[in-house]
Amino acid sequence: MKDNRKTQSSRRAALPWLLGLPALAAAAIAVIGPRKLWEKTVGSDAGDLDFSADNLGELLGEKPNVGLAAPNGFFGPGLAGRVNHIVPDYQASADDLFVAVKAAALSLPNVQLIEQNFASSSLRFVRFSPTMGFPDTINIVLTERPEGTSFVAAARARVGYSDLGMNAKLLRELINAVDQQIRAASPAS
Figure 1: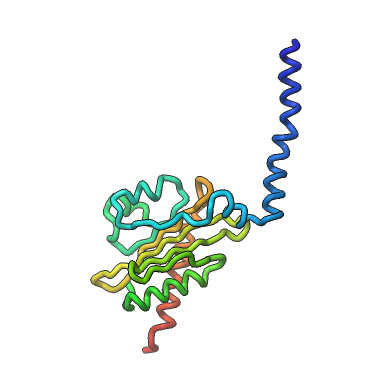
Figure 2: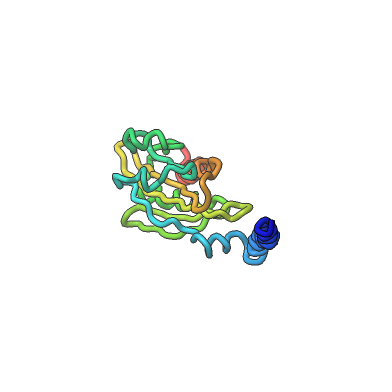
């Protein structure tokens, strides 16, 4: 009987701590904001992504928190099924498409440029979700194709198991914004 009282007493003592953790997390979010909280705890940038790597599927992982966009036929059968959106081939120079992709990405809400590399035709951005400030890394690499210039993009969540399709949606918005940038830069016919 005495052991049972100790167990109940231990549970009662732990209860305020367990109830206090959500309150502590809410206070941290309120004081420093969700974006800063994620930056301090998990970091906001997932870093570079090599789209030509043999182990790209492993790098992307199996979690449903990655969006992938690529030109038709860019990936072999192993990754082709993971592509959420087909990126068109643009009749624009690599330099013009680089500028258009950068401008398009920065026109999307809560997107920040982390790195641009003209030599490797690559861009990296971080996007923070509007409400909770979850960070997503967006990696983009331009690719020359026989039909024109295109790009490959991956958007990866830094937090959580699933992003509920938000990164795939983000890449659709990016492709639409690039289309608008290219149309705006094209001379009227």
